[in-house]
Image 1 (spheres, rainbow, N blue to C red):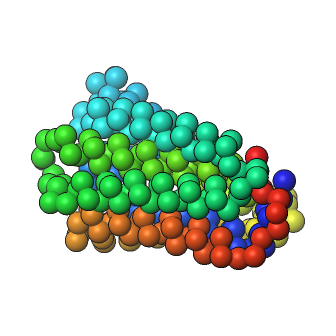
Image 2 (tube, rainbow, N blue to C red):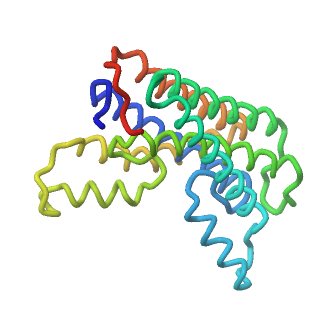
Length: 232
């Protein structure tokens, strides 16, 4: 189905949420060990490397992130089944609120957390990993269900679609091309912002990510909308 709101509103929200992905994984990779809590492809690769004896990896961290992300996707998917069709606005607001609350919980858990190099991960490190990955799982399931043509975590797919639909790839352009390009730029921009915020603390970076999720989706929901939801 098509989006129930003006397309620009939804696409802008997704670009903001894509930037949040960069912030979150900057925190995970640089602050919590060589893991990802949003881009799961990296964790699967790291687990494979670790199984083959690769050095300097944190397989327990990758496994924790993967398990929590899966749990978040299950929760986000069930929330979508329960609310998406008949209560579109409540569904999106609830999903964004849950993801933001989990990020805030991770931020509070990370207060005073040692993220220096060479440190041994402790219980709180794994708790922050799990909470962050859980939030990203909920958010990713919601974004997938929107079917808006711009995925906030499968950035390779966005890149392929952008090229395929461009004149270079034999397409005709248009159809959200500028937002796909913006989403591709949003990932490194978010990663840079997350890296800079890490100089303050993990908490500051995760609170910014929580604000990004709520701000992006909230701005979208403030627009007038028809009754029929997208996706489903």
